[in-house]
Length: 242
Image (cartoon, rainbow, N blue to C red; front, top):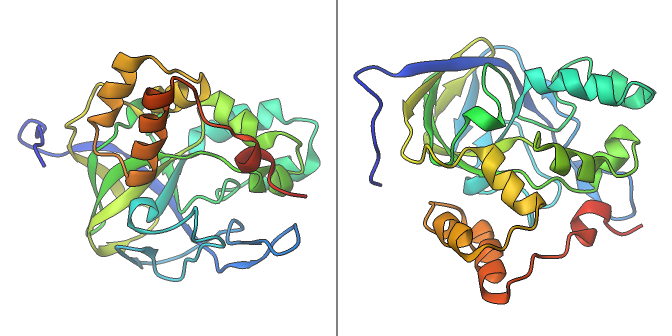
């Protein structure tokens, strides 16, 4: 990969507040499974190409794999959610500690506007690459007991992002997040999430996105927009089947 290294030394971006995992189990709707109820781990946790030791995904068609090995969410984003969901008791209980959104890494100091596609990070002894943003699904509606929560998350651009693992190692709460390289500074996660949510089909924008090192599923999404001039349907993802 053609990377633009940062000057001389790695840059400290933030801190790993919590490392969280869960095993897949039956979820809210018939036949559904999820590992969204992740719990914080203490001590070092091994991480490899498929994710964290002890973590699972409920639906491998849309979750997991090397391009979605680790899901990240910014802890400071919990503050606006607590304010916006003030009247929802279940949501308030979830938002009292990391893990409400099913994230593996709860992070201080980094948010969607400060994280770019293809950023390379070192956390603990592992090295990661930012692979894509998150497209929230109906499981957030059921978890928070807030109708339309998935769409709220998408519209807010506070959806989180995924990492692929370049070098396996171990991580633990309290580790510093070191930025090693930022080859695509023009494309923070928030910008990509905005293109998706605003149904942007501008050819020049889509061609620029298609030149990014995105996983195949996101390449297909933007290529279809470019070919058709239309955005994709969201109902199945945001609402699921009841």
